Length: 235
Image (cartoon, rainbow, N blue to C red; front, side, top):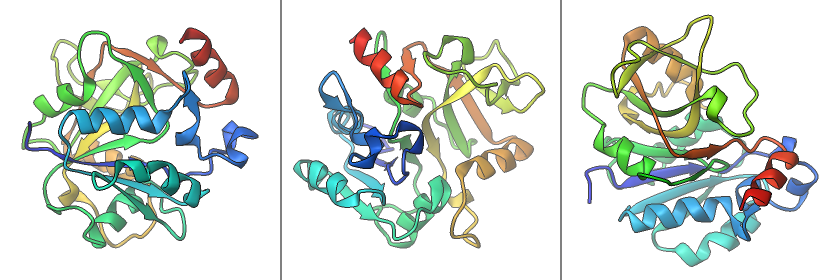
């Protein structure tokens, strides 16, 4: 379908804000409408003909691995002996040669994000708008239009009139990173083992190589048990 056909889903975290639910269940396996969050993500990727989907795990790894076995060989679950955060997790997968093409752009998804498609598929949209001039392309949502989100926002847009805009950090950031992105893995600094991709975002802002677009689907911020209950009420 497209030139970007490898993805990684980040699913290694402890999900502490979702306790007590995450004592026995990894956060990505929590259910919305009787179906786990990560299942929605994986099935959409398979529908879009992704050839290689990696999932990193640590907390309650055996449960995660067991639940995702049905998606083999499309999905490979990687055990991390220690949590490496998003950047370290991606770099670890590259170093282990888990991707088929180590240098090509990769689609990355946080394993606890959830959206409901209304007009378009955000995965298709992000792929269709990726160009070689970018190091990163992020799917964003207005912070006031992101159900359950109460933070201060992550980014501002350099040009609000463009469909795709370079991203900035200002004193008032009205847009939130949804957890869905494309990255050129060649920009990663392999001198560190454990790091967040947020560090990479900030470096890319300085280089003017990070872009974003505002998605028009319904996005749900699941940070605590009340958020999960609220979403299940909606469904």
